[in-house]
Length: 149
Image (cartoon, rainbow, N blue to C red; front, side, top):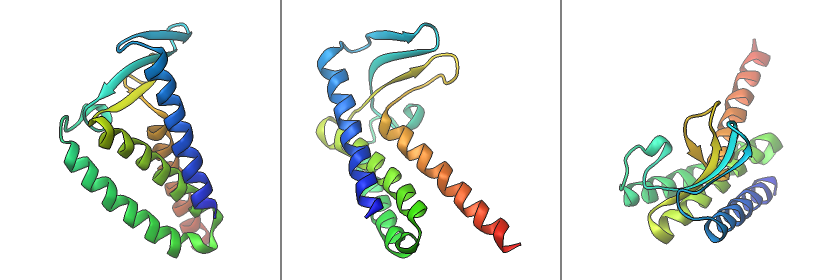
């Protein structure tokens, strides 16, 4: 249940924030939240992280669907007795579906979180959920390996 709740929450929050950005901002517009540190900057990314493989929309759609199938499988095997795994898989799945929705809609992913000093690339909440989920997954795996020693 944690998988579905987390995944749906990530998806809905991602959709809502992207909707606000698209409705309230012009492409390329930037709004400083914390001057020279955090800005909301509206762009559309035709590729993956850092613009890698730009314009390969169908490739990303197919890969995302394959990854979602794998995540759902892992959730029902590894996550059924481990709430943290379910949350981790929910974060990744919700983020993947959020960006998949953009790709299916327009072939481009809406990005807007712009940490200028800390991170040189603009991203969105779906990207953040995927990264946080993967970091938590790595941590969970490392901690379970340490407990075995």
